[in-house]
Image 1 (cartoon, rainbow, N blue to C red):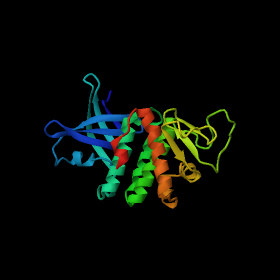
Image 2: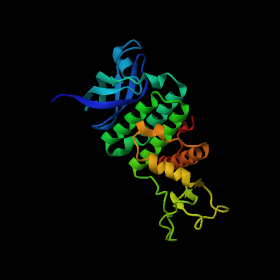
Image 3: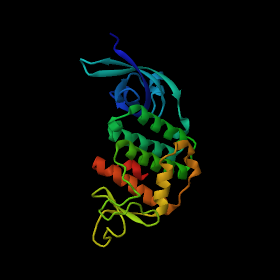
Image 4: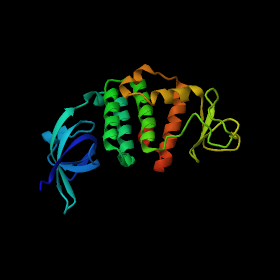
Length: 249
């Protein structure tokens, strides 16, 4: 029985391992997150191929008895050099990768997770700073849906029977993970509240259905951006028990 398996993969992280090797973390469509050793120094062809954000077909040799995995070959299909050309692109891509790693790739449909990650990074490759920020918010919102923790932002979670509140501000209670209408929230007493105006909710609702490649068509002002960022990071932080530093670039 062959100990080598082939995966469709995206490199999320690479870090030194020992004197001349490196360790890579891969998001695969078949098994989720895989960690493997890459042998060779800085001039190694395989090490260059396994740089962060490259994607393609990888061959991984495994010794289950020793709990050991080695990257033996990588057919890179997308290099994404644009992500390394600008600081804002690099930091946005890092935030995507760290979010995926911190949530263990969602623990579900890894093929869908890989598609969302790749399509987001593809859109970031030639994006300006403002679009990079938008793409990151879009990814975090879509990822919260993928994890099953995305709040319903058009209905009040209390028993007030407010089925829809399209034209009024609402508040997200971060400590309880629920959305409340103006009649059901006490902004003077309750803490951890994030105000969401109709414009922010419309953007999240519309953009949340889009492929990242189409997001350039849907701009957002600073007020909408600040509200959306506060919401998506609070939702994910509640699940992780912490805020990732990469969200704040």
